[in-house]
Image 1 (cartoon, rainbow, N blue to C red):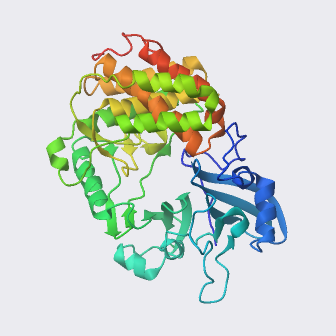
Image 2 (tube, helix red, strand yellow):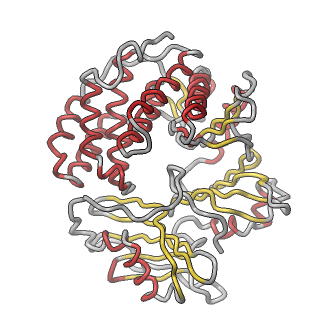
Image 3 (tube, rainbow, N blue to C red):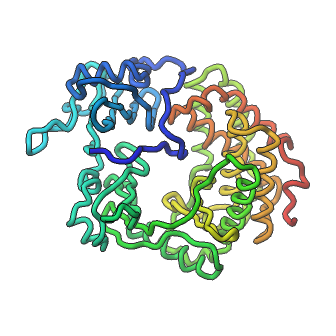
Length: 449
């Protein structure tokens, strides 16, 4: 059974399904029903997956490929009883496997159901179409515990779940305290030996600076990784002063990561490809398909982004640079960087732009106002500058504009983020304004303090 509370990729609690402002998808005509709580509850009842009273439903995660597929995870709150987590994979008309749902378990209990009307397979967590080890991870299987050298592991709480891709659990001991975080990956998703090597490399590098840490690797096996459960305070935007200090410390941590000698990463890291020319063009095309109203603007933006600034140095990138991937220690100068899964080799402006884009998106969707976004951005940039020079201003501007498209605009579409979908025109306009020299002054982007 599911214990703990699933959380979204951005670290927010599960919420209602997005109010869609997308073009119809004729190949996935049931898309909107799979994103509607009432329709999902009714369908789950029809398929015999839930009975009794359902007090509410929350969309935990979504991954949408226009005209191809939709993956969603829904939490259904039952009364009485624990919550039920359902993952659904729906295929476009005329595609998908012959058998849509999972087989019954050895004990005859249902693991899910096939749904030919919606071209979907429904799975009852911890069963998953591709995460074959998820059930054993949730059960704190002794065999897995031995392979990962976690003798005190007796239970699991869900920290993050991406259907068919990954599951992260808080592995707890007999007293309920965490003994590790265990990551379970779909086969072929990650080379866990290489990923473990990256964590170990960064951990050794961070040991050179007191107060800066990343989780130690406790054990690894194919498709499994056990990481140290670090103490610390997660990011919170509630307090202006604390948030600014947090981002200042994060800026220093990212700068120190960028100082790691690239030669030491040989065999452990691949090039960071998210902002390649083909990815930019593909993102623009998908955004235009999803929202034809922004098609001309996004096409113009993509054309402008074909003119790249001169290449600069390459460094080890975090690859998923946002405040949720840090823990602030009890010492004001201490901070931990977590989640190196997407790390790779690229220009430092990639990480810097990713952080700035996340802050600016927060201002667009109402998490904070424009002045607050400016203050948070300056805190991060100042922290970075205290460790190393910023990239040149044209590089930061180009990477920020590209990131607003390839990370923020496209994720609003394929992860069905309601706030981002509502603000897609503003995201595209902001990216164009950045290329025109707006948003930040040259003084704010000075290489030196």
